[in-house]
Image (tube, rainbow, N blue to C red; front, side):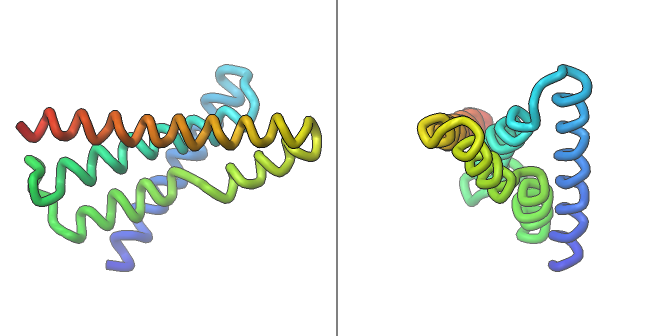
Length: 126
């Protein structure tokens, strides 16, 4: 169990790093966009996988596979701590309103992505 989560987290962390390289270096965008991207995409993936591999799901994945993907890969890929740091720095550098708007937008986008992942998985499971 620990090995599954640890290996998954290593993969997720590497994917997060590569997303940062692509977004910051490749597209010339700020680190803020990397954090937003990984949290929104991670929310979609974890809900898609959770719904697709749950009791009503079509993908026969056992508990260890779910731990590997959801706890490991998604846990290593997404990052609440980076979002917290980004929000705090925005509040210091820009304004409290800017930081609050960023935080609200990331939470809403992540919830919307999770909902989309669930809807897609329900359709796949039919």
